[in-house]
Image: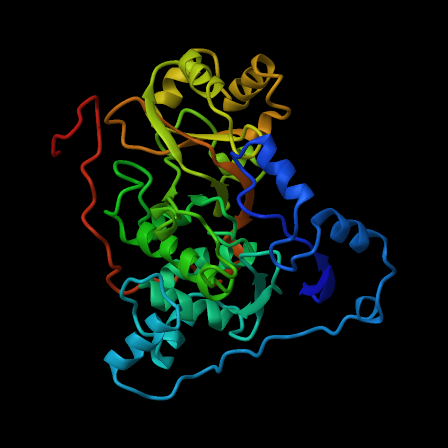
Length: 401
C-alpha cells in the first residue's frame, strides 16, 4: 500500500502488472497471485490491507497542493526563440502558431462583451490531476494561437465553457467531434456542406484546432503522465469540426432535437474512438452495420449523414430520426438500453447519398449566444474566407452556376 494525491485526497493505490487486456486467464491469475510490480509486495495482501487499515491522519486531513500558475506575460525575445519556447514547452500541437502578443489578444477580446478576467471554466485531461481554471483572456490567447479571428471567439468560448477536453487521458486513443448549429454558422462562414470535414474551410479549421490547444494547455497534457493514448489519432488535430447542414436537411436541426430553439446558436460535443466507415443504403443497411460493431460506450453511435440520406430516410417514414433510433434499440435490445445513444447529424453537399458510421457518443450541447457581443458577431471589415465549394443545385452537381 502507498499513498498518492488525487484531487486533493490521499488515496491508496495498488498496481497489477500490465497489460490486463487481451491476455489469458492464466496470465491474469498470475497477476493476482503475484506481486505489485511497483512495491514488490503481494498484490492481494496489499489490496486487503488498503481496504481494511484505518485512515491515517494525512488521509483524514489532506493537504491540498495547488500547482503554481504560469506567468501572464513572457519575457520579450525574438519571434524564432518564442516559437521554439512554445514548442519545447509542449504548449502547441506541433504545428506553427500565431504568437499571442498583447495586441493580438486584445483584438481577440473584442469578439465578446465578457470581462477578460471572468472565469470561463475548469478542465483536466485526467481524473488524477486538479482541474485547472481559465479566464476569458486565457481563452483569447488560445484563439490567437489557433489562428482564429474575433468572429470565431464566441464559439471557442462556448467550447471552453463546456469544461470538456477534446483528448482525455486514457490508454484508449479517443477522438472528438463538435457540430455547430444555429445562425452563427452562416455568419462566420462555417462549412456544413461539401467537404465539411476536410481542410478547406477557415472557420472549421481554427475552431477545431482551438479545442485541441485548450485541451493541451488548460487540460495539462503531459505525454506519459497525464496523456497516455496508446497510439493517438490524427482526429485530435481538428476534432472533426463542422456545422450541421440545416438548410438541406429533411429533419429538425440537431440542437432543436436536443431541446434548444432553432434561432439559438449552439455547439454539440461528441466523443468516441474513430470513424468506422462510409456506407450507402437504407435504414436496414444501417442496422446491419451496427449489429457487427461493439461500441466503446456500450453501444453508442453517431451517424453523420448527407442531406440526401436524411431525405431518403424521411421517405422511409422516419420524419424524425428519433424514430429510427428507437427502432434500432428495439431490434438490438440485448446491446442497447437508450435511444439517445444513437444520434444522427446531417453534414454534406449532396454529391452522394452516403453516411458515415462513428462510434461517437453524444455528450452535451452548449449555447454560444451568451458569448456573442450585444452588437452582434464582431467581424473584420472584410472577413477572411477560403474559396466556397460549388454546391449541388437544381438537380446538378459539380457544375458552376
